[in-house]
Image (cartoon, rainbow, N blue to C red; front, side, top):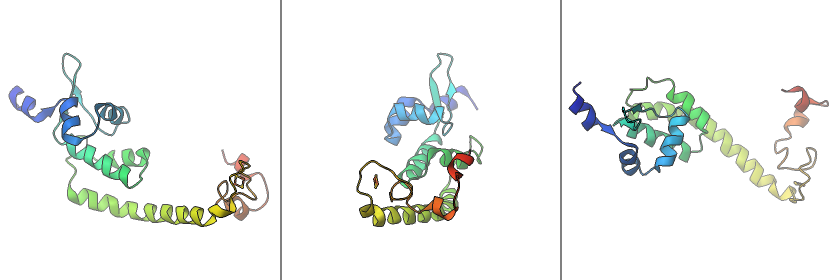
Length: 151
Ligand code: FES
């Protein structure tokens, strides 16, 4: 690929920010987190390929549905850095995440429904507080120091 082609196909961090609507600081954060990649010019400036726009859109959409960055990174790591994410990729990934989302929605509904039991006194009691132990997870495990033994 000629130098001219590279130049016309690459975006500066400012251009990527304008085109994606994501602040440059967030883009640098995404890069530090391994969600997007750039090459550095001889002057140490970032240059992104155009398909990075799709990655950024993917990250934003994933965050909007509440996916943690670690999970987004894990999914992106399945693709080569130069892979252009397609509509089919998103369809397959979002289908896998549907189960996760449904579980989290159910958990949030439980918390909402039990919220009236918590009086917000700050005790966060495992035995009494619906926020500290919303699903009585520790009760299901029986007696004993399960939380201490877990690490
Ligand atoms: S913080 Fe005390 S009951 Fe929830």
